[in-house]
Amino acid sequence: MHRSRLPALMARIARAGGAEAARATVAAGLTWQTCARLLHIPDPYAGAVAAVLIVETTVAATVSAATRYAAGCLMGVLLAVPGALYADPGIAGLAVVVFASVLLARHGSLGHHGLHVPTTALIAFALVRGRHPDELAAHLAEMVLGLAFGLACSVLLFPAVRVRSAERALEELRLLVARSLDGLADAVVRQERPRTVLGPGWEDDLGRALTRARTAVGEAHESLRWNVRPTARRRRWHLDDRVLGTLTDVAGQVTATGRLLDAHPAAAEGSRSGTAFTQPYARLLRTTALGAYPCRGGRPHPALPAARQALARLGAPGCGRPDGAATDRRLLRPLESARTCLSAPAPAPPARSRRLLDPLRTSPRR
Image (cartoon, rainbow, N blue to C red; front, side, top):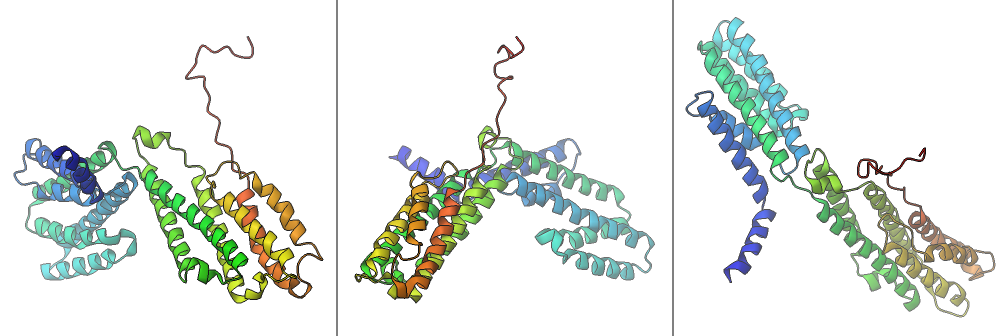
């Protein structure tokens, strides 16, 4: 019983940021011990704080946080030292240092790490003004060690690889796009509005799925940057941006089709004059849905070339209702754009040389 609960507990801790907390703990502990044993600093709180504050979920985010932290501290020191040494009286120098450091802290390039500009400036001003330069040097050495250990722990201690979450988000988007196309086909056949078949919030659901997919793919790419894990090095994400772009374009065309069907419900009438357009149009919607299901960057679905010919026949003059030819053409344009996006060939992956794996392979000259 306890063994079955342990994996669930570990998974819950991991979802709550347990790995990030563990890396920050190790970095703070190593910084504290190194400063205490090598630099002989009794309470190296500044280094431990620096190590904790820069550790993020991904390596790239940790490098960015460390850069901003270091830049903020450096600006504070550069502002405080001249003010403490040359400003007289001291209250005037303190006012100038605080004013300038707060202005720099509010600059957007440092983010929330801009807070370290006035904090470091005040500490440095007090130490230099009080004739304690050795303590200032020790304080800066602590922060340098904290930054170094924070970066090292983020790089070496199992950095996150957020590929599976991106794959799940893309799969959810593919399924939702395909189901929306199937629902539009059902609406055409049943002579109903798309909102009746798919629900009143189907466009909002599709937009939220797109937002989640964009966020997940961006996080996945960020997690692979400067990641030394073998799992990250084996990942080939050269197609993911293209797949996301294709699904985004198709989702836009699906939304446009649904709005046209909502605005022109007469386009899906099933009368004798409209049957010649309605039934083939519904089949084309379902064929496009078949092409959206396997949209993973590989070869397009084999039914898509046939759908192109069917679209050309359906859009030919004399097909469908003479009184609704303009509406029919408006309905066909988004479907043709979606089919074109799904039929676009994917770029081939870069070829890898096998000479290093098989150095005894004979060359063509032999």
